[in-house]
Length: 186
Image 1 (cartoon, rainbow, N blue to C red):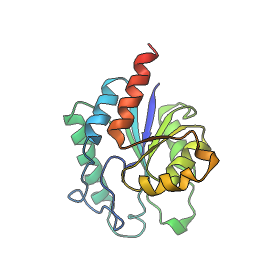
Image 2: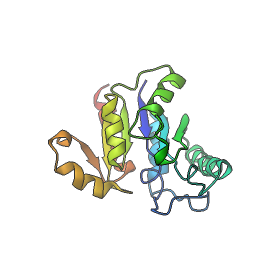
Image 3: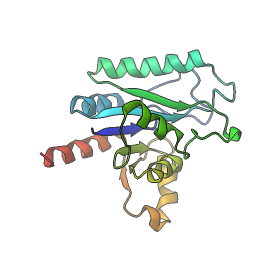
Image 4: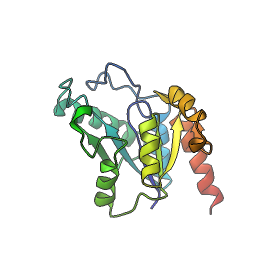
């Protein structure tokens, strides 16, 4: 199974330091919806793994989050694709839970839901926590420059640990790269 794990805010939709709190504020990054749909059409299974501490901070409620996710899923479906699962951590950062990235709880939930290993699968994010999560379970980390990606890139450039990191301008560019790789493996 070709699994692609996507962070949400800053990868699929525009991010905000003030949190995305409702479906009206949830605005896709240009090209991201079509990228997800195209990857889905080419046989990849796409899931979202996202820290959503706005719930734990009481900035929005579960109905608001579900409305955002419904909007995201509907846009992808309208474009001919499918998001197979959405996994999120609802906790406040101080809760010390096991599901807040970079801890591996969200990946554990994905493995359980899909009865697979995430080892060797793709994880696309814009934040150092996404990259650390990927490495914690031997996923292939990909950084996009949208959202917090540019500041994350500056942090990773200073470290030998990330010298082989794949970096793309946005999710659409990453998707094109992954699709080219799939074509050459046939």
